[in-house]
Amino acid sequence: SRMDYKATVEVLKLANQVNSIRKKPFTVMVIPMMVRTGETMTYQLMDELPNLDVPVAPSVSHRSAYVKAASDENFVWDQNDSKATAEIELLMEFIKENA
Image (cartoon, rainbow, N blue to C red; front, side, top):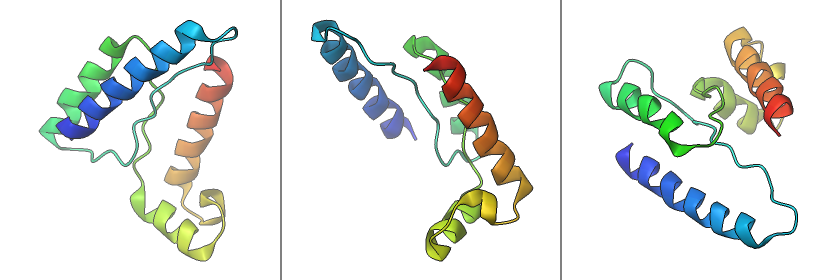
């Protein structure tokens, strides 16, 4: 939502302030969570994310797999949902490459 985007901008400002005073800055990246594909607002916000000047990870959007994993108290890759598993694998690879 637009409110989530504005909150992300504020958190990034705070992270930049903290990084400016740290001896060893930490890596900041945006991970779009629970993205709703097919909605105009989603496309608009996803187009704006690169303007934040931080790495933007692949989005995480397969809600039902994450809810099921949480309710079963295990991991999404244990849910037999190949799309959700692929999402997490892409995300882990992105983090390794950008951290």
